[in-house]
Length: 336
Ligand SMILES: NC(=O)c1ccc[n+]([C@@H]2O[C@H](COP(=O)([O-])OP(=O)(O)OC[C@H]3O[C@@H](n4cnc5c(N)ncnc54)[C@H](OP(=O)(O)O)[C@@H]3O)[C@@H](O)[C@H]2O)c1
Image (cartoon, rainbow, N blue to C red; front, side, top):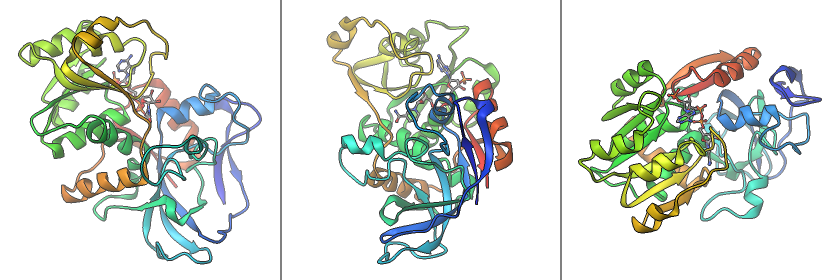
């Protein structure tokens, strides 16, 4: 089978298309033929060696994918051949809280990921794809979608009529924008680009703010909500954005700490956190049960993830460079 791997040393220039032996499913496992994958910022960091410098190489990157079941190991009756499935991000995390071992079972590092034509995964570690989705759309769900779902629903407790601030127009934020429509909540979307903000408006954002031209965007969000502040912030920016997120959130609101696009270390003023009883909640993707709960809503409302562009497997390096350039809006997909 063909797979994209980073070999020898980390770096986008080390990505190459390789031939690997076809994997064979053991007892309780299934063989899946990957139809599409999508990139996450994590994959870019992983390939550059910035996510886990100790990750052994070669590594097949990719945490998000959609596939078809093409072989069953002994004793498997949970899925059938021909079914469309998505492997879950952390193969051992089926429900409840993550365990320490959960972190060692994630696709695209440390375990080989979705940029491969064939994969073997435990039969328990897949979720059936909603019928209305294309393979590329389904490939946006496991990591980006489940993360957005958990930040909004499991941890954010977003209710109808709530206001949620989404930072930037990348994969996680636009998955959240899609889900907010179904939850009956309104979104304030920030971006560094007016063109992207116009697109976000067309995709259902209630209000938009350019974080470059309005550096005090937290205050602007408070003004948009009549002086109260937003119910929930999905914090993907990290170091440079957390202070404004704390300004934007209402008394008793929640800030879901998801990403660190601008860095992982910062000083924060603790006073607004306790004076306004803000809850800071770290979010790590989610379990199979949470992925399935999201899929019920995705199917019910026939939601479709926003895809920026799709590349062929052989163009994977260009796809990563496209992500690194930051011009994308929504998910970047790879067709296998
Ligand atoms: N905790 C978890 O389980 C989990 C899961 C998934 C992702 N993440 C993390 O979440 C972050 C986003 O991931 P992704 O895959 O959605 O990335 P992505 O698709 O590459 O999105 C990046 C976008 O974020 C915006 N952005 C960049 N720097 C920003 C800043 N300083 N302030 C506000 N917006 C900024 C930009 O949008 P504009 O061009 O519109 O400004 C950029 O296009 C990453 O840090 C990733 O590692 C964490």
